[in-house]
Length: 467
Ligand SMILES: *Cc1c(COP(=O)(O)O)cnc(C)c1O
Image 1 (cartoon, rainbow, N blue to C red):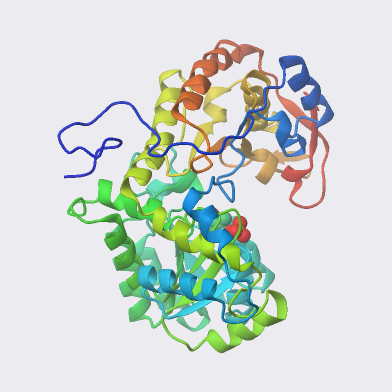
Image 2 (image 1 turned 60 degrees about the vertical axis):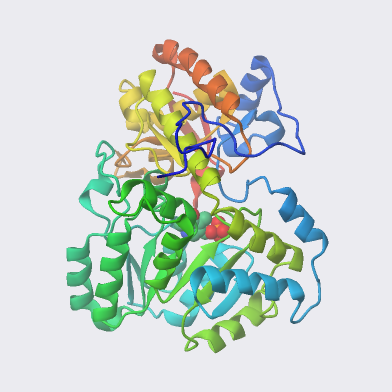
Protein backbone atom coordinates (compact mmCIF):
# COMPACT_ATOMS: atom_id res chain seq x y z
CA UNK A 1 0.00 0.00 0.00
CA UNK A 2 1.20 3.49 -0.78
CA UNK A 3 2.57 5.60 2.03
CA UNK A 4 -0.13 8.07 3.01
CA UNK A 5 0.79 11.67 2.53
CA UNK A 6 1.92 12.56 6.01
CA UNK A 7 1.84 10.03 8.77
CA UNK A 8 3.42 7.10 7.01
CA UNK A 9 0.63 5.04 8.56
CA UNK A 10 -0.94 2.61 6.19
CA UNK A 11 -4.35 2.53 7.90
CA UNK A 12 -5.12 6.23 7.78
CA UNK A 13 -5.12 8.80 4.99
CA UNK A 14 -5.09 12.27 6.58
CA UNK A 15 -6.81 15.07 4.66
CA UNK A 16 -4.34 17.65 5.90
CA UNK A 17 -1.28 18.18 3.78
CA UNK A 18 1.66 18.56 6.10
CA UNK A 19 5.32 19.41 5.48
CA UNK A 20 7.29 16.23 6.26
CA UNK A 21 10.08 18.25 7.87
CA UNK A 22 10.59 20.66 10.73
CA UNK A 23 12.09 24.08 10.32
CA UNK A 24 15.51 24.97 11.70
CA UNK A 25 16.36 28.20 9.91
CA UNK A 26 13.81 30.86 9.07
CA UNK A 27 13.87 33.86 6.79
CA UNK A 28 11.72 37.00 6.81
CA UNK A 29 8.57 36.95 4.73
CA UNK A 30 8.32 40.46 3.28
CA UNK A 31 4.95 42.20 3.68
CA UNK A 32 5.03 45.40 1.62
CA UNK A 33 1.88 47.46 2.15
CA UNK A 34 -0.69 47.75 -0.59
CA UNK A 35 0.40 51.33 -1.39
CA UNK A 36 3.95 50.13 -1.64
CA UNK A 37 2.94 47.27 -3.97
CA UNK A 38 1.12 49.79 -6.18
CA UNK A 39 4.20 52.01 -6.22
CA UNK A 40 6.43 49.03 -7.04
CA UNK A 41 4.18 48.10 -9.97
CA UNK A 42 4.39 51.60 -11.38
CA UNK A 43 8.14 51.77 -10.91
CA UNK A 44 8.63 48.35 -12.56
CA UNK A 45 6.40 49.20 -15.51
CA UNK A 46 4.07 46.35 -14.44
CA UNK A 47 6.82 43.80 -15.07
CA UNK A 48 7.36 41.56 -12.05
CA UNK A 49 10.86 40.59 -13.24
CA UNK A 50 11.76 44.19 -12.41
CA UNK A 51 10.39 44.10 -8.84
CA UNK A 52 12.93 43.42 -6.09
CA UNK A 53 12.62 40.12 -4.23
CA UNK A 54 12.37 41.93 -0.90
CA UNK A 55 9.15 43.49 -2.15
CA UNK A 56 7.58 40.06 -2.84
CA UNK A 57 5.68 38.04 -0.22
CA UNK A 58 5.27 34.78 -2.17
CA UNK A 59 7.83 34.25 -4.91
CA UNK A 60 6.44 31.77 -7.43
CA UNK A 61 8.52 32.96 -10.38
CA UNK A 62 10.33 29.62 -10.64
CA UNK A 63 11.07 26.36 -8.85
CA UNK A 64 14.62 26.48 -10.24
CA UNK A 65 17.43 26.96 -7.74
CA UNK A 66 14.97 28.25 -5.13
CA UNK A 67 14.99 25.11 -2.96
CA UNK A 68 15.52 25.27 0.79
CA UNK A 69 18.41 22.92 1.55
CA UNK A 70 18.40 20.50 4.46
CA UNK A 71 20.62 20.44 7.54
CA UNK A 72 22.28 17.36 5.99
CA UNK A 73 23.09 19.30 2.83
CA UNK A 74 24.52 22.27 4.72
CA UNK A 75 26.48 19.90 6.92
CA UNK A 76 27.96 18.12 3.89
CA UNK A 77 28.97 21.48 2.40
CA UNK A 78 31.02 22.26 5.48
CA UNK A 79 33.14 19.10 5.14
CA UNK A 80 33.63 19.43 1.37
CA UNK A 81 37.08 18.75 -0.04
CA UNK A 82 37.96 21.70 -2.27
CA UNK A 83 40.94 20.02 -3.98
CA UNK A 84 41.25 21.05 -7.61
CA UNK A 85 41.53 17.50 -8.94
CA UNK A 86 40.00 14.25 -7.73
CA UNK A 87 38.43 15.60 -4.55
CA UNK A 88 36.64 13.37 -2.05
CA UNK A 89 33.50 15.36 -2.72
CA UNK A 90 33.62 14.42 -6.39
CA UNK A 91 34.00 10.75 -5.47
CA UNK A 92 30.93 10.99 -3.26
CA UNK A 93 28.89 12.78 -5.93
CA UNK A 94 29.98 10.28 -8.58
CA UNK A 95 28.99 7.34 -6.42
CA UNK A 96 25.50 8.73 -5.83
CA UNK A 97 24.92 9.45 -9.54
CA UNK A 98 26.25 6.04 -10.60
CA UNK A 99 24.07 4.26 -8.07
CA UNK A 100 20.97 6.19 -9.12
CA UNK A 101 21.41 6.18 -12.90
CA UNK A 102 23.65 3.21 -13.54
CA UNK A 103 25.66 5.49 -15.88
CA UNK A 104 29.42 5.15 -15.57
CA UNK A 105 30.55 8.51 -16.97
CA UNK A 106 29.81 11.75 -15.20
CA UNK A 107 30.43 15.32 -16.31
CA UNK A 108 29.53 17.98 -13.72
CA UNK A 109 28.40 21.40 -15.01
CA UNK A 110 27.37 24.59 -13.27
CA UNK A 111 23.74 24.24 -14.38
CA UNK A 112 21.47 22.52 -16.88
CA UNK A 113 22.06 24.78 -19.85
CA UNK A 114 25.83 24.35 -19.56
CA UNK A 115 25.24 20.60 -19.93
CA UNK A 116 23.08 21.31 -22.98
CA UNK A 117 25.66 23.56 -24.57
CA UNK A 118 28.44 20.99 -24.06
CA UNK A 119 26.49 18.04 -25.40
CA UNK A 120 24.98 19.90 -28.34
CA UNK A 121 28.19 21.61 -29.38
CA UNK A 122 29.87 18.19 -29.37
CA UNK A 123 27.15 16.29 -31.26
CA UNK A 124 25.12 18.69 -33.42
CA UNK A 125 25.67 20.10 -36.88
CA UNK A 126 23.50 22.48 -38.91
CA UNK A 127 20.45 20.78 -40.40
CA UNK A 128 20.25 18.07 -37.74
CA UNK A 129 16.99 17.36 -35.90
CA UNK A 130 16.41 16.45 -32.24
CA UNK A 131 13.04 14.90 -31.34
CA UNK A 132 11.55 15.08 -27.83
CA UNK A 133 8.13 15.31 -26.18
CA UNK A 134 8.66 19.06 -25.62
CA UNK A 135 12.02 20.78 -25.49
CA UNK A 136 12.52 23.17 -22.60
CA UNK A 137 13.28 26.73 -23.81
CA UNK A 138 17.02 26.71 -23.02
CA UNK A 139 17.29 23.25 -24.62
CA UNK A 140 15.60 24.51 -27.78
CA UNK A 141 17.76 27.65 -27.81
CA UNK A 142 20.98 25.61 -27.48
CA UNK A 143 19.89 23.26 -30.29
CA UNK A 144 18.99 26.20 -32.55
CA UNK A 145 22.28 27.90 -31.68
CA UNK A 146 23.98 24.97 -33.46
CA UNK A 147 21.79 25.46 -36.53
CA UNK A 148 19.81 22.31 -35.71
CA UNK A 149 16.07 21.87 -35.21
CA UNK A 150 14.26 21.02 -31.94
CA UNK A 151 11.17 18.94 -32.79
CA UNK A 152 8.28 18.53 -30.30
CA UNK A 153 6.24 15.31 -30.61
CA UNK A 154 4.09 15.37 -27.45
CA UNK A 155 0.75 13.51 -27.60
CA UNK A 156 -2.34 15.51 -28.69
CA UNK A 157 -3.77 15.44 -25.13
CA UNK A 158 -0.62 17.23 -23.99
CA UNK A 159 -1.61 20.26 -26.07
CA UNK A 160 -5.15 20.46 -24.72
CA UNK A 161 -5.32 22.34 -21.38
CA UNK A 162 -8.66 20.75 -20.47
CA UNK A 163 -7.58 17.13 -21.04
CA UNK A 164 -7.19 15.17 -17.80
CA UNK A 165 -4.95 12.47 -19.34
CA UNK A 166 -2.74 11.19 -16.47
CA UNK A 167 0.46 11.36 -18.56
CA UNK A 168 0.18 14.49 -20.67
CA UNK A 169 3.97 14.56 -21.02
CA UNK A 170 3.99 11.39 -23.16
CA UNK A 171 5.62 11.49 -26.56
CA UNK A 172 3.54 10.30 -29.54
CA UNK A 173 5.23 6.96 -30.26
CA UNK A 174 3.69 6.55 -33.71
CA UNK A 175 4.92 9.99 -34.76
CA UNK A 176 8.31 9.36 -33.15
CA UNK A 177 8.83 6.09 -35.03
CA UNK A 178 7.84 7.70 -38.32
CA UNK A 179 10.00 10.76 -37.62
CA UNK A 180 13.04 8.57 -36.87
CA UNK A 181 12.44 6.45 -39.97
CA UNK A 182 12.30 9.51 -42.23
CA UNK A 183 15.17 11.45 -40.62
CA UNK A 184 17.45 8.72 -39.28
CA UNK A 185 20.61 10.18 -40.84
CA UNK A 186 20.21 13.63 -39.31
CA UNK A 187 19.22 12.59 -35.78
CA UNK A 188 22.41 12.44 -33.67
CA UNK A 189 20.39 11.82 -30.48
CA UNK A 190 16.78 11.64 -29.31
CA UNK A 191 15.39 13.09 -26.09
CA UNK A 192 12.54 12.99 -23.59
CA UNK A 193 11.91 15.65 -20.91
CA UNK A 194 10.77 14.26 -17.54
CA UNK A 195 8.58 15.72 -16.27
CA UNK A 196 7.54 17.69 -19.30
CA UNK A 197 7.85 21.32 -18.25
CA UNK A 198 4.99 22.38 -20.54
CA UNK A 199 1.77 22.55 -18.54
CA UNK A 200 3.57 22.73 -15.20
CA UNK A 201 5.47 19.46 -15.16
CA UNK A 202 3.25 16.88 -16.81
CA UNK A 203 4.57 13.35 -16.27
CA UNK A 204 5.68 10.77 -18.82
CA UNK A 205 4.57 7.19 -18.13
CA UNK A 206 7.09 4.40 -17.72
CA UNK A 207 5.33 2.57 -20.53
CA UNK A 208 5.93 5.59 -22.78
CA UNK A 209 9.60 5.83 -21.76
CA UNK A 210 9.96 2.12 -22.58
CA UNK A 211 8.30 2.71 -25.94
CA UNK A 212 10.53 5.68 -26.79
CA UNK A 213 13.58 3.69 -25.71
CA UNK A 214 12.65 0.79 -28.01
CA UNK A 215 12.10 3.13 -30.97
CA UNK A 216 15.37 4.97 -30.46
CA UNK A 217 17.16 1.63 -30.10
CA UNK A 218 15.54 0.23 -33.26
CA UNK A 219 16.81 3.23 -35.23
CA UNK A 220 20.17 3.16 -33.39
CA UNK A 221 19.70 6.68 -32.05
CA UNK A 222 21.25 7.43 -28.64
CA UNK A 223 18.52 8.28 -26.12
CA UNK A 224 19.22 11.15 -23.71
CA UNK A 225 16.84 12.12 -20.89
CA UNK A 226 16.37 15.72 -19.81
CA UNK A 227 15.97 14.48 -16.25
CA UNK A 228 15.57 17.69 -14.17
CA UNK A 229 12.44 16.38 -12.45
CA UNK A 230 13.09 12.64 -12.54
CA UNK A 231 11.90 12.13 -8.95
CA UNK A 232 8.61 13.98 -9.44
CA UNK A 233 8.08 11.98 -12.64
CA UNK A 234 8.80 8.68 -10.89
CA UNK A 235 6.37 9.56 -8.11
CA UNK A 236 3.61 10.25 -10.66
CA UNK A 237 4.38 6.86 -12.26
CA UNK A 238 4.00 5.15 -8.89
CA UNK A 239 0.77 6.99 -8.17
CA UNK A 240 -0.92 6.84 -11.56
CA UNK A 241 0.44 3.98 -13.67
CA UNK A 242 -1.24 0.59 -13.37
CA UNK A 243 1.05 -1.97 -11.74
CA UNK A 244 3.60 0.54 -10.40
CA UNK A 245 2.13 1.29 -6.98
CA UNK A 246 4.02 -1.41 -5.09
CA UNK A 247 7.46 -0.29 -6.29
CA UNK A 248 9.66 2.26 -4.60
CA UNK A 249 10.12 5.58 -6.39
CA UNK A 250 13.85 4.93 -6.42
CA UNK A 251 13.31 1.65 -8.23
CA UNK A 252 11.12 3.40 -10.83
CA UNK A 253 13.74 6.14 -11.23
CA UNK A 254 16.47 3.55 -11.75
CA UNK A 255 14.45 1.75 -14.40
CA UNK A 256 13.80 5.12 -16.10
CA UNK A 257 17.51 5.94 -16.31
CA UNK A 258 18.27 2.37 -17.37
CA UNK A 259 16.05 2.77 -20.44
CA UNK A 260 18.15 5.66 -21.77
CA UNK A 261 21.79 6.00 -22.79
CA UNK A 262 22.41 9.05 -20.67
CA UNK A 263 20.91 12.17 -19.16
CA UNK A 264 21.32 15.89 -18.77
CA UNK A 265 20.22 17.36 -15.51
CA UNK A 266 19.65 20.78 -14.02
CA UNK A 267 20.33 20.02 -10.36
CA UNK A 268 18.45 23.22 -9.49
CA UNK A 269 15.27 21.17 -9.62
CA UNK A 270 15.20 17.60 -8.25
CA UNK A 271 18.73 17.60 -6.82
CA UNK A 272 17.38 20.12 -4.28
CA UNK A 273 20.21 22.62 -4.66
CA UNK A 274 20.60 26.28 -5.61
CA UNK A 275 23.16 25.71 -8.36
CA UNK A 276 24.51 22.68 -10.25
CA UNK A 277 23.98 20.24 -13.07
CA UNK A 278 25.54 17.32 -14.90
CA UNK A 279 25.67 15.03 -17.91
CA UNK A 280 25.85 11.30 -17.20
CA UNK A 281 26.42 8.66 -19.88
CA UNK A 282 26.32 4.87 -20.16
CA UNK A 283 29.05 4.59 -22.79
CA UNK A 284 32.33 6.46 -23.10
CA UNK A 285 32.24 7.32 -26.85
CA UNK A 286 31.49 11.01 -26.30
CA UNK A 287 33.24 11.45 -22.97
CA UNK A 288 36.67 12.57 -24.11
CA UNK A 289 35.25 15.30 -26.36
CA UNK A 290 32.86 16.45 -23.65
CA UNK A 291 35.58 16.58 -21.01
CA UNK A 292 37.79 18.54 -23.41
CA UNK A 293 35.03 21.12 -23.90
CA UNK A 294 34.35 21.08 -20.17
CA UNK A 295 37.93 22.04 -19.39
CA UNK A 296 37.74 24.79 -21.97
CA UNK A 297 34.66 26.53 -20.54
CA UNK A 298 33.55 25.08 -17.18
CA UNK A 299 36.53 23.63 -15.33
CA UNK A 300 38.46 20.47 -14.55
CA UNK A 301 36.40 17.24 -15.00
CA UNK A 302 36.07 16.62 -11.27
CA UNK A 303 34.40 19.94 -10.47
CA UNK A 304 33.00 21.32 -13.75
CA UNK A 305 32.28 24.93 -12.84
CA UNK A 306 31.19 24.19 -9.29
CA UNK A 307 32.73 24.31 -5.85
CA UNK A 308 33.18 20.91 -4.19
CA UNK A 309 30.61 22.03 -1.61
CA UNK A 310 28.04 22.22 -4.42
CA UNK A 311 28.89 18.62 -5.41
CA UNK A 312 28.31 17.59 -1.78
CA UNK A 313 24.93 19.34 -1.67
CA UNK A 314 23.88 17.63 -4.93
CA UNK A 315 24.98 14.22 -3.66
CA UNK A 316 22.80 14.57 -0.56
CA UNK A 317 19.92 16.20 -2.47
CA UNK A 318 19.73 13.42 -5.06
CA UNK A 319 19.05 10.96 -2.25
CA UNK A 320 16.72 13.16 -0.20
CA UNK A 321 14.50 13.88 -3.18
CA UNK A 322 13.56 10.20 -3.43
CA UNK A 323 12.00 10.13 0.04
CA UNK A 324 8.42 9.24 -0.73
CA UNK A 325 6.90 11.26 2.06
CA UNK A 326 8.61 14.34 0.63
CA UNK A 327 7.39 13.55 -2.89
CA UNK A 328 3.84 12.85 -1.74
CA UNK A 329 3.79 16.25 -0.05
CA UNK A 330 5.47 17.94 -3.02
CA UNK A 331 2.95 16.64 -5.55
CA UNK A 332 0.06 17.35 -3.16
CA UNK A 333 0.97 21.07 -3.06
CA UNK A 334 0.28 21.81 -6.73
CA UNK A 335 -2.78 19.60 -6.74
CA UNK A 336 -4.12 21.41 -3.66
CA UNK A 337 -3.45 24.82 -5.14
CA UNK A 338 -5.10 23.91 -8.45
CA UNK A 339 -8.18 22.61 -6.67
CA UNK A 340 -8.33 25.65 -4.40
CA UNK A 341 -8.21 27.97 -7.41
CA UNK A 342 -10.68 25.90 -9.43
CA UNK A 343 -13.18 25.89 -6.53
CA UNK A 344 -13.08 29.70 -6.62
CA UNK A 345 -13.74 29.72 -10.36
CA UNK A 346 -10.13 30.34 -11.44
CA UNK A 347 -9.48 27.82 -14.24
CA UNK A 348 -6.12 26.04 -14.50
CA UNK A 349 -4.46 23.65 -16.94
CA UNK A 350 -5.63 20.14 -16.01
CA UNK A 351 -4.45 18.09 -14.20
CA UNK A 352 -2.02 20.02 -11.97
CA UNK A 353 1.60 19.26 -12.84
CA UNK A 354 4.40 18.46 -10.41
CA UNK A 355 6.07 21.79 -9.83
CA UNK A 356 3.60 24.46 -10.94
CA UNK A 357 0.01 25.45 -11.55
CA UNK A 358 -0.87 27.21 -14.78
CA UNK A 359 -3.82 29.59 -14.54
CA UNK A 360 -5.81 30.01 -17.77
CA UNK A 361 -5.99 33.82 -17.91
CA UNK A 362 -7.89 33.88 -21.22
CA UNK A 363 -10.73 31.85 -19.68
CA UNK A 364 -10.67 33.82 -16.41
CA UNK A 365 -10.55 37.28 -18.03
CA UNK A 366 -12.47 36.77 -21.30
CA UNK A 367 -13.10 40.51 -21.73
CA UNK A 368 -9.40 41.35 -22.01
CA UNK A 369 -8.22 40.69 -25.59
CA UNK A 370 -4.86 39.01 -26.23
CA UNK A 371 -3.28 42.26 -27.44
CA UNK A 372 -3.93 43.62 -23.93
CA UNK A 373 -2.10 40.70 -22.33
CA UNK A 374 -4.68 39.05 -20.00
CA UNK A 375 -1.90 36.88 -18.50
CA UNK A 376 0.21 39.89 -17.57
CA UNK A 377 -2.91 41.66 -16.23
CA UNK A 378 -3.47 38.70 -13.91
CA UNK A 379 0.21 38.57 -12.88
CA UNK A 380 -0.16 42.23 -11.86
CA UNK A 381 -3.39 41.53 -9.99
CA UNK A 382 -1.87 38.60 -8.03
CA UNK A 383 0.93 40.92 -6.91
CA UNK A 384 -1.35 43.86 -6.17
CA UNK A 385 -3.72 41.76 -4.06
CA UNK A 386 -1.42 39.21 -2.40
CA UNK A 387 2.21 40.14 -3.02
CA UNK A 388 2.60 37.06 -5.25
CA UNK A 389 5.20 37.06 -8.01
CA UNK A 390 4.22 34.80 -10.93
CA UNK A 391 5.19 34.55 -14.58
CA UNK A 392 3.14 35.21 -17.71
CA UNK A 393 3.40 32.52 -20.37
CA UNK A 394 1.33 33.94 -23.18
CA UNK A 395 1.36 36.82 -25.60
CA UNK A 396 3.99 38.81 -23.68
CA UNK A 397 6.38 35.92 -24.23
CA UNK A 398 5.23 34.61 -27.60
CA UNK A 399 2.94 37.20 -29.23
CA UNK A 400 4.08 39.41 -32.10
CA UNK A 401 2.95 42.13 -34.46
CA UNK A 402 3.04 41.38 -38.19
CA UNK A 403 1.83 43.87 -40.84
CA UNK A 404 -0.03 45.89 -38.22
CA UNK A 405 -1.88 42.81 -36.95
CA UNK A 406 -1.37 41.19 -33.55
CA UNK A 407 -0.43 37.49 -33.58
CA UNK A 408 -1.39 36.19 -30.13
CA UNK A 409 0.10 33.19 -28.35
CA UNK A 410 -2.08 30.05 -28.55
CA UNK A 411 -2.70 30.24 -24.79
CA UNK A 412 -2.65 33.03 -22.21
CA UNK A 413 -1.29 31.39 -19.06
CA UNK A 414 0.09 32.49 -15.71
CA UNK A 415 2.52 30.12 -14.05
CA UNK A 416 2.74 29.77 -10.29
CA UNK A 417 5.88 27.64 -9.78
CA UNK A 418 6.50 26.34 -6.29
CA UNK A 419 9.96 26.39 -4.73
CA UNK A 420 10.79 23.14 -2.92
CA UNK A 421 10.41 23.05 0.90
CA UNK A 422 10.07 26.85 1.12
CA UNK A 423 6.40 27.70 1.70
CA UNK A 424 4.08 25.93 4.12
CA UNK A 425 0.53 24.68 3.97
CA UNK A 426 -0.74 27.74 5.85
CA UNK A 427 0.92 29.98 3.25
CA UNK A 428 -1.06 28.15 0.58
CA UNK A 429 -4.28 28.42 2.59
CA UNK A 430 -3.66 32.14 3.08
CA UNK A 431 -3.17 32.55 -0.67
CA UNK A 432 -6.33 30.65 -1.57
CA UNK A 433 -8.26 32.78 0.91
CA UNK A 434 -6.83 35.94 -0.65
CA UNK A 435 -7.71 34.73 -4.13
CA UNK A 436 -11.37 35.33 -3.22
CA UNK A 437 -10.55 39.03 -3.48
CA UNK A 438 -9.02 38.54 -6.94
CA UNK A 439 -12.23 36.83 -8.04
CA UNK A 440 -14.43 39.52 -6.47
CA UNK A 441 -12.44 42.25 -8.26
CA UNK A 442 -12.32 40.42 -11.56
CA UNK A 443 -14.39 43.00 -13.47
CA UNK A 444 -11.99 45.78 -12.37
CA UNK A 445 -8.88 44.07 -13.77
CA UNK A 446 -7.50 46.12 -16.65
CA UNK A 447 -5.56 45.09 -19.70
CA UNK A 448 -2.09 46.42 -20.44
CA UNK A 449 -0.17 47.82 -23.37
CA UNK A 450 3.54 47.27 -23.93
CA UNK A 451 5.26 50.64 -23.93
CA UNK A 452 8.85 49.40 -24.11
CA UNK A 453 9.63 46.34 -26.25
CA UNK A 454 13.20 45.01 -26.04
CA UNK A 455 14.42 43.12 -29.14
CA UNK A 456 15.23 39.79 -27.40
CA UNK A 457 13.62 37.79 -24.56
CA UNK A 458 11.38 40.75 -24.05
CA UNK A 459 9.37 39.33 -21.14
CA UNK A 460 12.37 39.94 -18.85
CA UNK A 461 12.60 43.70 -19.40
CA UNK A 462 9.46 44.88 -21.24
CA UNK A 463 7.52 47.75 -19.65
CA UNK A 464 3.76 48.20 -19.64
CA UNK A 465 1.10 50.77 -18.97
CA UNK A 466 -2.63 50.37 -18.37
CA UNK A 467 -4.40 49.94 -21.71
C1 LIG B 1 15.60 24.28 -15.87
C2 LIG B 1 15.60 23.36 -17.00
C3 LIG B 1 16.69 23.27 -17.88
C4 LIG B 1 17.87 24.22 -17.83
O1 LIG B 1 18.51 24.17 -16.62
P1 LIG B 1 19.22 25.45 -15.94
O2 LIG B 1 19.84 24.87 -14.70
O3 LIG B 1 18.15 26.46 -15.65
O4 LIG B 1 20.24 25.97 -16.87
C5 LIG B 1 16.62 22.32 -18.89
N1 LIG B 1 15.55 21.51 -19.03
C6 LIG B 1 14.49 21.58 -18.21
C7 LIG B 1 13.33 20.66 -18.42
C8 LIG B 1 14.46 22.51 -17.17
O5 LIG B 1 13.40 22.57 -16.37
